Length: 368
Ligand SMILES: [Zn+2]
Image (cartoon, rainbow, N blue to C red; front, side, top):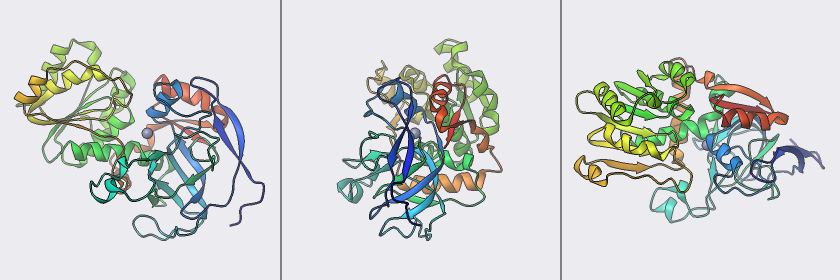
């Protein structure tokens, strides 16, 4: 498919944190070697987009946000013929791709098996709109999948709502539950029942967990949690920390939780998280993505309880494959499509961002 000369694509751009979004036009050119030009079908607003927009973490401006994206291939650049599993790619295919891309093979890819933390790693929806090729975020009509991204073709029977959160929310929770070592018969506590927490609960059950306890202050989230594998949804604000610890430990008999997962973004929940754990348990932090997330903990407890504490940031490319397969295989067991519960046009990005910020929706979707 030839790109018409002079083709322009719309992008929702903001000039500084909290400034209104404006639709601006930027040129669309043919993809270069290693790139894929995609027409965006859907992009969902991740919590990190909200943090960037509010200025809680640095993001270059004029900014174009959005990294949970799916789209149809318009044109493949030279050298891109197959997805990461070897499936042939052609124009018109619907694809997802890693939320990040790296400058090329390096010590992290070759030796440490941490490609997601390669020096110079960059993410979609994290560059200035003025940076060529301009279309590298989800809140627009087009996106270039840039070289050294990981691409997957989407099965035809997956809905856009099921497919869009795969490359950030679901893949991240694949990585988190892997690092938490969740296995058959485990009791798991999930701190935060946003999209990450609900997917985390569902994945924990699929990995064999016998019990999932979910904690969230938002009643609407606790109300839907059972559909995603949460056996007990508690409001941590309804009781003091000591009572909360007692209640959670009573549910995770006999000795406490095998694994605790933090995906709420509040560092002050960490001391309770450590107390939920049984001796020898695993604690994975994935929600406190903002700098200066200070908290006071009793480090002696980590020692005495033989706690393993891990952080997860980005995910390994294998987790993207697992995320797609998990959603595809479990879409009948868990109503994943319900998690994308707000739909907005490109002109409504500002309203979508506000609804996401106020937690009125679990996942707001922008449909250009
Ligand atoms: Zn994200």
